[in-house]
Image (cartoon, rainbow, N blue to C red):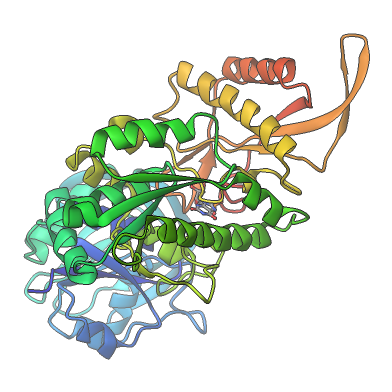
Length: 511
Ligand code: XMP
């Protein structure tokens, strides 16, 4: 039986991915589709429920995403959120009007039952239009000062809408409301758990790979470790893991893979010492996308060489990659988002790729990957590791990548990691890229001498999913300690600066 899937229709705001995650947290599988998908295509996918996301537009603006009434008339349970709520109102014969002043931020609502619960609640609002008239057959279930119709539902037809954003943490009861929609409103069973994901993936991996040999590139990160552990669980000894030391790693990462991961899983591991090959390939390249493409290409070449070395009775035919759902969506491979950066494990593969890809995490969000890793018994040090980009330190050196620059960055990065851990900030900080502005120099003074060194940028961020992020408010004394340690012990660096940009408009990495 096909698994129950909730389709989240992305109306173009930043919220669709967060909604999809929250649905999964409630134990139901979800996928994101573009609002451009036709109603017949949406219905043909037989979703167990549909959620219409918020959007930046007003339903009255020309070209705003429209809702085909067929979607709400197909007998499928639907929840409209914010803009999606207004789309529902419009499509079903209600009406939407402008409010004089935008209702934005934490807002008090009064709820009177149904999936929104009862009583006074604090919710997160962000809208300039409101529903003026609910469609026939709907009961109004919540109101706020600016929005007398802040939620409605037609229980018989299983159609629901809310003006606020239940998916954001600023709506404390939001997750419970989503759960009520899924379980009580739509009648779904919360069966999407780490254990079930593993069972499901193991049978899919066996189907795909058969008795063929398979190799998996380990990067030291959570994703490739969990992907490898899953494949090993599925096909055991057919798997050989390859760890490419491309020389773009942080201090200590090689040991973590060679020692800790092998200890935990007993997996077969081959390490390739290819640092010089990558350095040669990267020589003269400063442009970020060119770096990613080069590294992506060399990665695959390294795997291919390793596979030829491994050669048992026949060559490995499959390559496991730890591609996640957000990578797929952000690389434009999903249905909706624009291509912001080509993540090397999705884009940039050479045309003459000699492997078929096996991507067992392609449908998963990071927190699900961690849950799967824990369920598979991987050590916490690997499972809770902060994200680190596949192209490694290469995209944290602004300018050409050289062995000397890598060495400088590695030393600064280690200091930052040690100090953040010592300050107990690992949980709070999503990740902290440390960036070397290798083409920039500034004048400084040290001892009696003038220096002309490079700046190091600290980029600590908080985030839910890396799609959006805020700069982390690291305590000033921790920053001071990091700064003086770096400038004292990494002589090429004479300035430490803090990046105080959110995402958007900045991305997390500098390249
Ligand atoms: P950005 O910089 O796009 O980063 O805000 C979002 C998340 O993705 C990671 N990242 C990458 N990961 N290959 C990867 O495997 C890449 O080319 C790449 N670029 C960015 C970044 O570290 C952050 O977690």
